[in-house]
Image 1 (cartoon, rainbow, N blue to C red):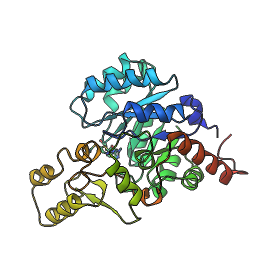
Image 2: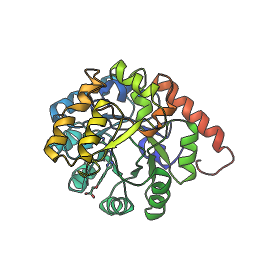
Image 3: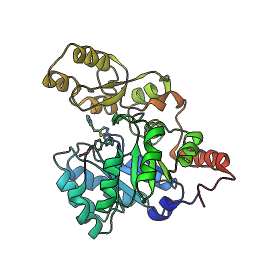
Image 4: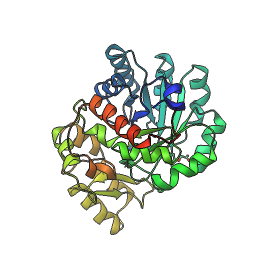
Length: 312
Ligand code: TUI
């Protein structure tokens, strides 16, 4: 399925891996890019030196295009923005903020800039500042989320901007990709299904939580603090939601989740850690290679969309 996005990014399939903190390492990013999608290094809260190393490792593993995600709340975001320029990274995606201040330097360096947005207002603003595309991410997603669903957000963003729109949130099979295309998206970004891939370095405990999750097994913590985060429910989310309901302070709540994602991804502590995943975790039933995921989902979507005019 060739679309404006496959052409813009020089990739084979309209499938982008979410830029997940701790999960989007060089191993996963290189595997997704090698499979013909766009692999993304998730810089999360990592230092710029780590990001630089990961970029160099991806370059050793694949000649295909890849990207880096900048989590804009990272105190090292400025330095990471510069590493992206220095290393001539082909694509950058951003999350959890407004990347306007980096736009000029990235555009001047020829980096394709694709901000994640959770609203029409930010999508329009990103188009005005020179974004090449936007990722419209619905509240079904894992991790830090906005409020609007993918089904409602994507067509509204598509109507509001003339740059291509990538849909994210609640997609993990060919039906979801086909649906996103019908809403006007030109590609999809998926996270949860790649967490549970063979090449993902997350702990087996984490992968098992995703594979075993049912439809109603994710919870959103932090709605009251202004930092809503979706995770698979466990002792930590239960405790958090209880404390949040009882009016705990921001400090108390932050203490509970500090370093939680690392705990779950690296240490395999899926009881006290943050097992970030999207609502579609219930659909992910097995651990597959990135090649199998990218090719399989693309073929399924293509079959469903035959006879439509949503791709060339
Ligand atoms: O960024 C994400 N997802 C993330 S980041 C992350 S790291 C983290 N870890 C623990 C606690 C909090 C974060 C885990 N998951 N997705 C992209 C995304 N961006 N979703 C929503 C947004 C967003 C929300 C508001 C982007 C911009 C925005 O407003 C910016 C503005 O200034 O208007």
